[in-house]
Length: 248
Image 1: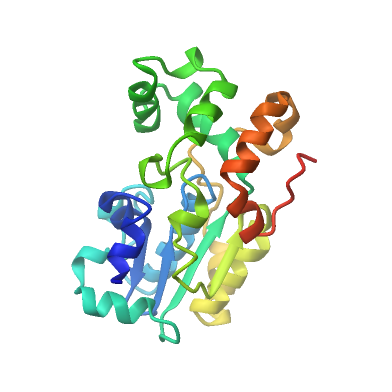
Image 2: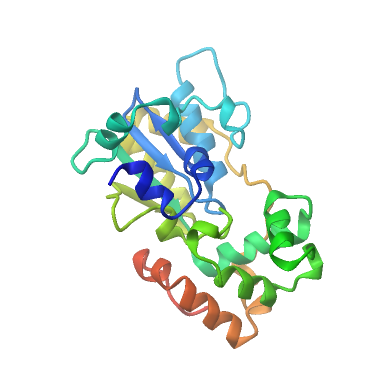
């Protein structure tokens, strides 16, 4: 099965293009998981790509400003070679605890930004209700009823988004260990000297909004049925990435 088909079994073509960042020069791919430190990671690796050139990072969340290329810019054959096991290209990503990721999505993309594309998707699923009119419990119930290919990128099952059953990853960082793991990522795809320079130079904390979701889990996951819903639907994420199934 072709790489495009593997990914597009679990997410729309547009999401595949937006979330896949390829460096031909430094031979790596970063597969982005939304709401899992993606803005910070992109800020750092874009700065690394621009290192030694006249250009700087402009807008990490607009891919047209990115120095990385997208899958549509290369042939299916070459894309397959890039993702092939044993390839010279390093396949990388960052993931996040499903409990805090979904809560962060709700607080940021639904409640705080009712005009966001995510909330517009939710409105289509509820017949027009969104934002604060949808409780967190209801939000979880709705998104957990969806197949991955139908889920919006910010709440899609991470294991499926990454196609871990078919794609071998050389590096999987975690938002919870971001200070350490960003350094590990840069050391893997660049030399350690450049990695050290960039970690000191690049301004992180590029997240569009801080929700403190990790500290608010008990506040929002007070209903056992909501907890069970997440555990059942996102079980693969908890097991695949070694996250505790306990809230605390």
